[in-house]
Image 1 (cartoon, rainbow, N blue to C red):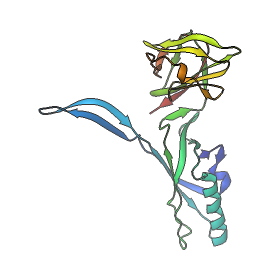
Image 2 (tube, helix red, strand yellow):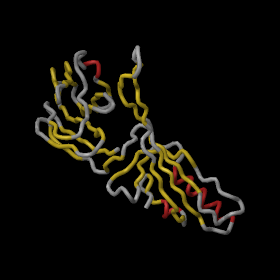
Image 3 (cartoon, rainbow, N blue to C red):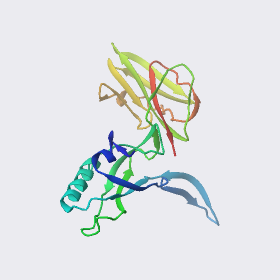
Image 4 (cartoon, one colour):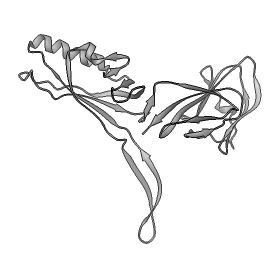
Amino acid sequence: MIIFNGVDLEEIAPVKIDDIRVSPIQTTPVARQRVGFGQDFVRMNGGNRTITVTFALLIQNREERFEALQAIVEWAKPYEEHTLNLPMYPGKHFDVRCTGYPEPSYRQWWESKLRLVFTTYDNPFLTSDDEINAQCGLPFSIGGTAPPLIKITRKLTAKVADQTYSANGRSMSFSQIPAGNMTIDLNKHTADVSGTSIMRYFSQTSRFIEPVTGNITISGTGSIAYRERWV
């Protein structure tokens, strides 16, 4: 099963899957040259990854083959990002855009190396389908091998002042939070209420809580929603 945006490829056309290849995340080490020999390691930067699906479309009739290929391209929804579920990762998905489309032969209808290429951009990690909920002020544990996706949410019926959320030595303080539905995105470093940014109330000495795996307690008032991720 190769499911993109909730639709299985095999429901779109009578494809025969040849192979699925998932590349590792592209990594680039950043180092600082010393005065003498050697370098000082600074950090590791990560890029995107690709998922390549090769398949055959065993339709001899040229018109029917063309229509099936057009249906596959439409299924892949050019330029739109959606979830991609693969059979070897049950309960998990990639957030991808289709960046490569089949190049069919006019003559060789039996070819088995037609390709679809999907590329991750904003989120290169394998991500859990299930969103897990926790409560601020209570300990919880996050699994996975990559930084999780974490949001803090809260519904306020009236404006509140001097609100702080803390964990692992970092604190985020807001001089006030207006009434509405608050969302703090720890990965994107944004905070809003009902879609309107509240970063103007963010203290200059504050630091966003770092999304990490393992045991964690986020102090403050509100609910936590997170998804585990894997490299």
